[in-house]
Length: 123
Image (tube, rainbow, N blue to C red; front, side, top):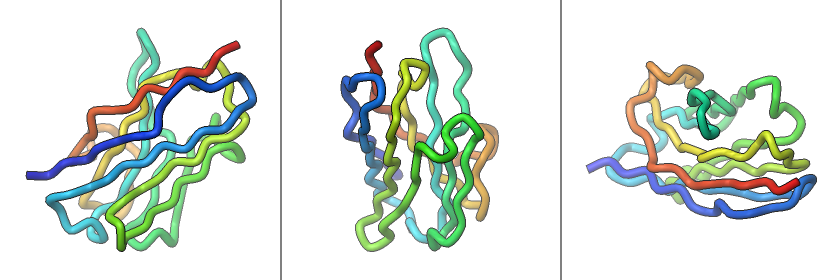
């Protein structure tokens, strides 16, 4: 039974920082690329950041480059997303995702999803 459980969401002011985490179980964590997606109210789910099996390669969507950092701790089976300089448009449910392929970046390629954690940025 594969589970991805996000935590760390909450309310933060514009310009603030927040970190969310995703604890994985039921899979060989180091054999999955991991990623973060988000879905705002009334919007499609979109890719934010991805990280390779070993953590040696990362990629981000343009809107979060320089503000968000993805990293993973394979010993803890956990992937993190550190968010800074948050904007109201960052308000969304943030989802953790796992992909058997070495690259993650599209919704159709995701093998497993977490249930999400809500991040709200006030203005």
